[in-house]
Image 1 (cartoon, rainbow, N blue to C red):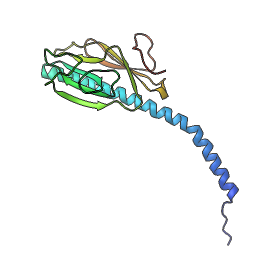
Image 2 (image 1 turned 45 degrees about the vertical axis):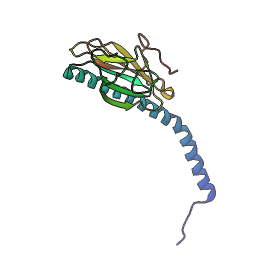
Image 3 (image 1 turned 60 degrees about the horizontal axis):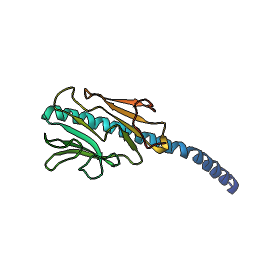
Image 4 (image 1 turned 90 degrees about the vertical axis):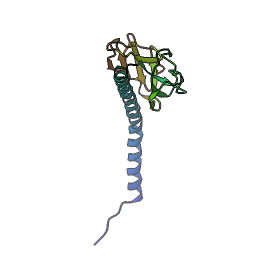
Amino acid sequence: MRCRAFSLPELLAVLAIAGVLLGLALPSWGYQLAAAATRASASQALSGLALARRTALASGHAVTMCLTKDLRRCDLGGREWMLFMNQQVGSLQHREDGEKLLRRWPLLKGVQVGATRAYVWFQAQPRAAATVTLQFCHPAAATARRTVVVSQTGRARVNYGDVTSNSPQSRCP
């Protein structure tokens, strides 16, 4: 009985074909990863907004959510979200001494956020919030934008794709 094996030219041909296919698939894979990060970041922000609204209503205190660099001041250049409870005399976009940090979570790698305001805040009564538009994008998946819009009633919704009217300036191409 004779055993048949692959020859070196056959193995090299299979490896070359696999390499070409992998080279064609990698750009698409990178786009999918970037688009998933954009979707996940918008979903995390939406979840944080819902928590901020519920906490404001339940506690009787204003609650702010924003990006930050130092867990003290709201800054759109920050890479971490913070959610904090405001004192009555405190600033809406600055966490004062004694103001409770309710939650913090990182902005996913590569995702960029543009906004009409550096912070979102909710008052302790229903239908009382600051209107804001947050636009999430990733340079590797610029067409997979997500826009989160918070109305004056405090309701947050997600718009998909590139929203051109009334959208904040974004750093994505």
